[in-house]
Image (cartoon, rainbow, N blue to C red; front, side, top):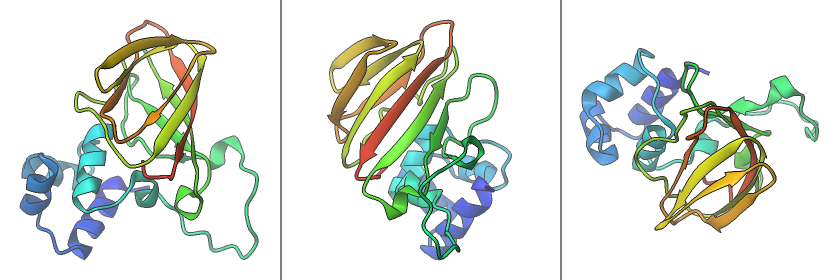
Length: 184
């Protein structure tokens, strides 16, 4: 998916200039311009801020319109939708199962390489989220609580609370998570 082009189309559809969108999202218009030209990739937190300013969820942003008449129930590894448009070895990967905009539940396969982070800004969105660490460990901040979770441990919280995920270890962390409704 061309993240920059999609963002530009949505911005124009909502009658926003780059400056207006930047002001609403707390970013610079130069940053918006670079993203729209695909010269930089936004962090998960920055993309969330941009979409909140439109307003739209990340699930809606990455929704694929299924042209098939037949419902899809099963997905191969290569059919997940990457919703963390970062690049590089320390980039967070958030792979969504199916089109969450047509369901009441969003399932993610999350990968956090060593040093990866959802961004310095704490995330907030409507709903609840839960997950289980399947490999490695992750530091999770929820409101005023910080905890390092290891393989087999999990979390469940109200997503309206400010939160952040950060891999402070030297190994990759993987989490299978769910969010309901799919507002992330």
